[in-house]
Length: 68
Image: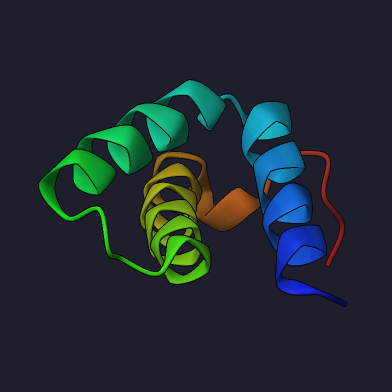
C-alpha cells in the first residue's frame, strides 16, 4: 500500500467516524506553521490523534451491539 493509499484509507475512516473536518483543519494549520513538514507523517499523526480521541469518546470503539 502506498503512502497516498494509506492516507486515503485513514481519511475515509475519519469521515465515517465524523472527525474528517477536524483532521483537515488541523493539517492545514500545521502546514502553515511548517511548510516543509512530511505530509504523510503529518496526516498519520493527526489521524492518530483524532482516532484516539474518538475511541476514548466511544468506549474504545465498542458499542452495546458488539459481541466479544
